[in-house]
Image (cartoon, rainbow, N blue to C red; front, side, top):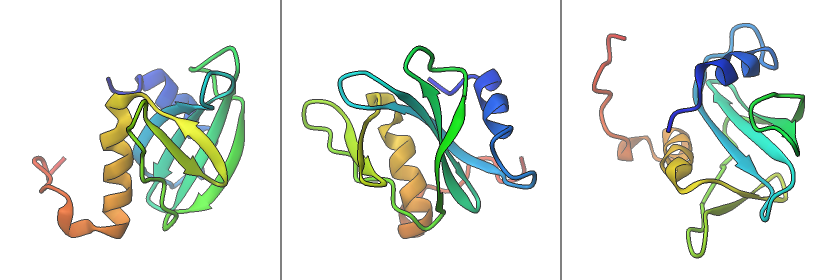
Length: 120
């Protein structure tokens, strides 16, 4: 399921004016707790905290990393987990391809499928 447009728009408030969102996905600390939105732009990876009670109301920037930072790999044995910035995160299975595509865009461009709508 795509990230809803209102959440995408709220996340834009935490980005530089000219950054273009390439990928966006929610994640959380394993076993519950704090929730986050990973926003991958053309220049950076911004991790935005939404707190413990909400998944849709960005509160603050947890961290910003250079775009050449690898997000995965995602360990899909018994859930979907990855380590980023020295912290463990959990992501819903449906977002594993998003993480993989974000990494492939930088680290393995030849593995990405062709854009089906290059003129959009």
